[in-house]
Every structure is written in C-alpha cells, then in structure tokens.
Amino acid sequence: MIKILFVCHGNICRSPMAEFVMKNLTAARGLSDQFYIASAATSSEEIWNGIGNPVYPPARAKLAEHGIACGGKRAVQLRREDYAQYDYLIGMDSANIRNMHRMLGGDPEGKVFKLLSFAGSDRDISDPWYTGDFDATYRDVVEGCEALLARLQ
Image (tube, rainbow, N blue to C red; front, top):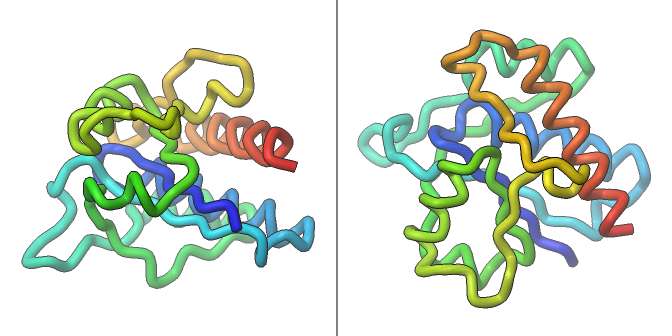
C-alpha cells in the first residue's frame, strides 16, 4: 500500500482538497485499496482544544462542484512520527516544505515533495485563504494529483 500525506499551512483548504481529489482519482481507477491518503497542517492555528476545524466552506464547495465529498475531515497537525508512516509527504508551497523539513527533522529518505513537482513545475499552489481564488487552487491541485498518480502507476 502506498501512503500519501498532503500538507499545507492550516489543513482546511489546499491539503484537504488534494487529499479528496486524490481519493477520488484512485477510486475512479479502482485503485483505492492500493492507497492510504490523508492530509495535515504545519501550523496548529486551525486546531482548538485538540479538535480541528472542518474543511473551509469555500474549499468544501469547490470540491462539491466536482462531485467530491469531504465530510468528516478535520484539521490535524503534522507530527514527526508521520515521516516513518508515509511514503510521500507532499507540501503545497515552498514555505510548507521548509516547515515540513523542520518539523520532521529533515528528509533523509527523500520522501518530501512539492505537489506540482510531479507535473514538472516548481510553482507553489496558491493559498486560497489569502487569494480567494479557489478555482485556480483546485486546477493546480488536480494537475499535481493527476501527475502524481501517473508517476505511481
């Protein structure tokens, strides 16, 4: 089983979008049983008293437009132990990657990637919390997830 953890700053927009887009892509190809897919945050901003906030409503709406449900997902924070548990730890932007390296104690096995690197790009996936452009974020997430799945097949 291939284990993938998508990571962004708060785990309420980009990384849950990637988690559920990837789950949808693998399900559509009959590959769900070959993957374990989750997402996490580098910050604790969206986690209160140990309970994470749900997916941000505009992100949830953007997924729903494409027939993708994300109910029950709540923000969780990246933990150092996640490095041993996942095959791929995938950040959305350069700041995520820097924070992931710090939080994970480095990347000795080469498991940390930026999502769009699988599509041959060094671009960051813009944070729609700040840009308000959930369409562009969704397109970039789909591009990265499709390229990742193609690489893994």
